[in-house]
Image (cartoon, rainbow, N blue to C red):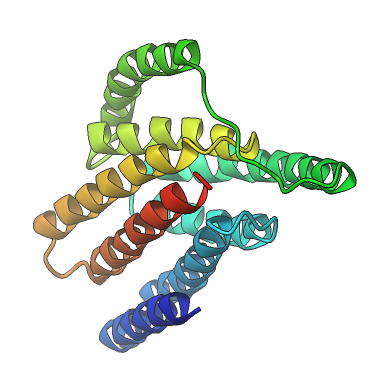
Length: 223
């Protein structure tokens, strides 16, 4: 709880700073409002997920909707496509699956245990990532994405991570750790391109906090 409270305070503080910096620019103020909702709900959902709580999907749905909108206006098209067209339906599926899995475990009198990928599944996932990440990167570059290959890595890894999460696999946290590291790189690149991009600073902080939560998730889901 202390860690979560600390993370929320940091994000709200950064959002307020961006609000003030935007002055009377109504468009940036609107994006900042969406950012507040996206970042705070995202950190809460991510933290709750480390505790294997089904409520993470409630906050997760709020996060992906508003973050998807922000990503579109920041021309991070991979994240936009990922959040709106993949995360939302997958989150709904995950919510249903987790509910059935947890209820079934409780009926059998056991604590829900995270699944583990087989060696064959690891190999198939690795080959898929090697093929899909550069392919999607070229497509995003064609669309005009400002960080096509980093964005592609973040998007493709997120697709796999979200699927593993919906199916209750513990390896999701390793995938999401990579996603969070790559995402920090994306926004660092955007900040280098535009040092006055305060939203980039905000999302560098958000994804950095996600890195911390992913490490916590890796530890907790092994138990």
